[in-house]
Length: 385
Image 1: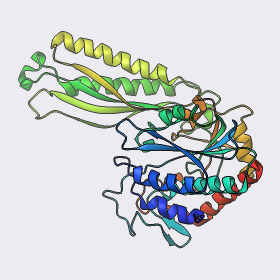
Image 2: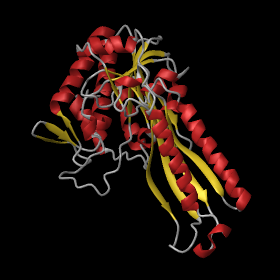
Image 3: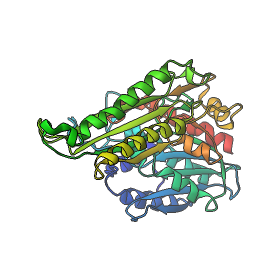
Image 4: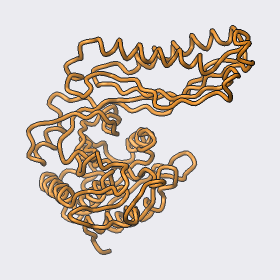
């Protein structure tokens, strides 16, 4: 089978419209066929309805201690975005590679696939693994079951390099996050009879006010040593949308909103989440006492672990050696790195591209960044050899 260049692999990967709401199996089928054709051992982990799969690859000796190259197969939609070229075809213009996912993060995945094949072809003393997840764009929900499935299927790796776009800077920390969809159920009456009803909108405002007060309390504290490295240097709770009610003169029967929490690594996200749940439970009890049909329902829709800077971390040392960087950084967005860290891997984020390009119309990856990523992989292969 012909060995493909990183650019040829990228062309293939982008051609699969793996939007999170759709299946990724066409991409996984092609990629598994290519890797196994090059002698790389591959394994799948299916989601519950078997419409998506994570792909796990292993090159080199069947021993523990692998370096894991981690990426995700899914991309965000292009619906409603004004693209000047076909988003599912890589187009090179003025030193940039345009296409959905070139930056976030099929560019890194293409480089990882190339490196895995090269590791198998050249022979390495230390193994190299690929961990390609699904549903990262839906709140990093696909990585935890994939990581669990890796244990016992392939020898345990030691280092996880997560290739989210960082302009090849070594990122050793990022915020964690969780979020709840909130449904406040009211009881409709004419607004002139307000005390006899329950306005879901007005009651939801009590929880929103709680969020504002909680933010004020958080921001009054002195940031911790790790939190101080972030911008902003503290945990934040945010509500971006709210909808409810049917008419100005009817107490609202329903109100819905979502609250997201982004937590610095040296803070306790469960403490904030638990406090919000307690406020919601207290309101639920009060509403039911007035009208049994009323109440508050919470549905958690994402939960992403923070990446904590490691003292003497093996992943940091390796990534710095490969990039030639001495300094490391932190970011406020979330990735799957913290989930690998939770599973016992030393983890960092380091990948080509600028996060500002992620999810944008005419998303692009600079050719120079793609080339820097290939040099990173070349140096990695030299070390593994």
